[in-house]
Length: 101
Image 1 (cartoon, helix red, strand yellow):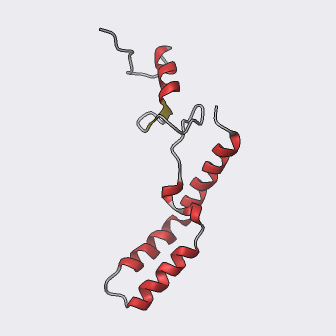
Image 2 (image 1 turned 120 degrees about the vertical axis):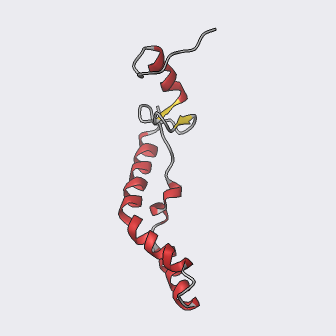
Image 3 (image 1 turned 135 degrees about the vertical axis):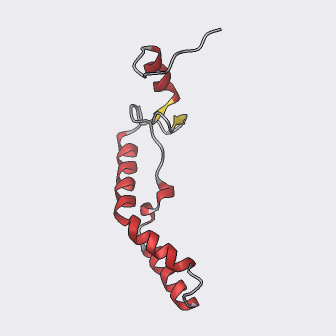
C-alpha cells in the first residue's frame, strides 16, 4: 500500500489540472500562435510560467486504484500488475483468465 500522503498529493494535482486546464490551453495556444507579435507570445509564456507547477498534466502520476502503487501500472485496468493478478486469479476482473499451456 502506498503512503496516504503520496496518494493525496496526486489527487491534489489532478484537481489543479482540472481547474487550470482551459486557462493553460488558451495560454499555450497564444504562445504558439505565429500571428501574434513576439511580445504577446512572450507575455503568454510568462503567464503560463506563473501558473502552479502542479497544474500541468505531465505531473500527474498514474497510480493503482486499489493500492496506490505507482509502478507496474496498466492503463486499461487502472491497476498495478500485482493487484490485477490477484483480482484476476480470484475471478473479479471480467474477461481476464490466467493463462496456462
